[in-house]
Amino acid sequence: QVQLVESGGGLVQAGGSLRLSCAASGLTFSIYPMGWFRQAPGKEREFVARIKSSGGRTNYIDSVKGRFTISRDNAKNTVYLQMNSLKPEDTAVYYCAANPRSDVADYWGQGTQVTVSS
Image (cartoon, rainbow, N blue to C red):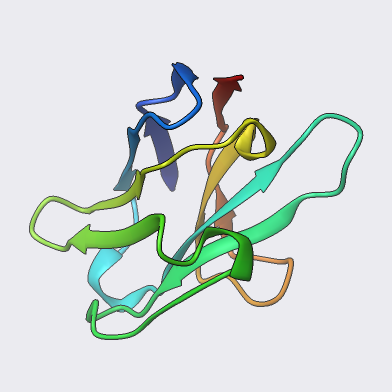
């Protein structure tokens, strides 16, 4: 049974930082590209960041470039999202995903709430 469990969300002031973690189990983590998505209230889920299985290549939605960094530790079966210079518009539920393609993925986590106050 595959499980992706996110943690690290919370309430932070604008300009602050949070680090999200996603612990994976039940799959061969090291062969899966991993990604983060988010869904704000009243909006569709959107792609945020993606990292290749080896960790060598990453890509980001334009609005987070230079502020967010995706990384992974294959020895710990964990993917991270370091979020700096947070803005109120970053407020959303953040989801971890295994093998994300466009707006689909093989597996999804349950989500973690990130709230940025102005």
